[in-house]
Image (cartoon, rainbow, N blue to C red; front, side):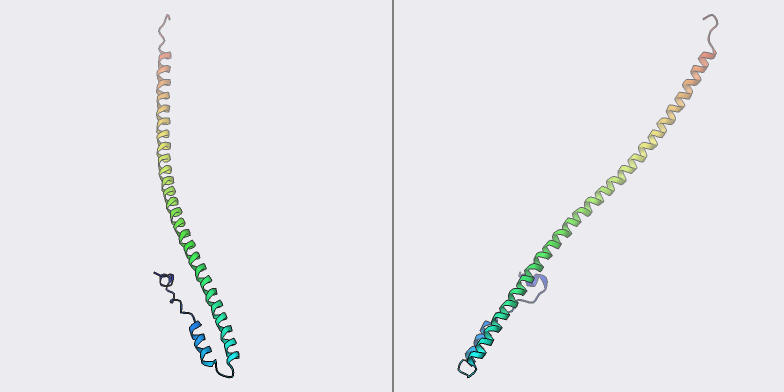
Length: 132
């Protein structure tokens, strides 16, 4: 496949040199042969310059298109990484919340045990045997 067909651009036209040569041959024997020949050579040079200029733009456009595609691929990869990081953050926050809840439960149990221990120690001190 040509780059023209890939990008929906019309196929590059054939050179105009054969057309210009045909005109030069036709006027070769006329009184204006030299003038027409010079004009046609100027046209040939100008058309060649336009063709070269167009080719340079075409090559630049293809290069820029490749750059854009590469950047789009990089962007897609970064978007995927970002989505994974966001999922990991959500998972982290969920686990953190679970651990904080567990800590609260353990602190409550420790507090309850402390109260029970204090009650038991207080009960022991209140029932000290006589004569000890």
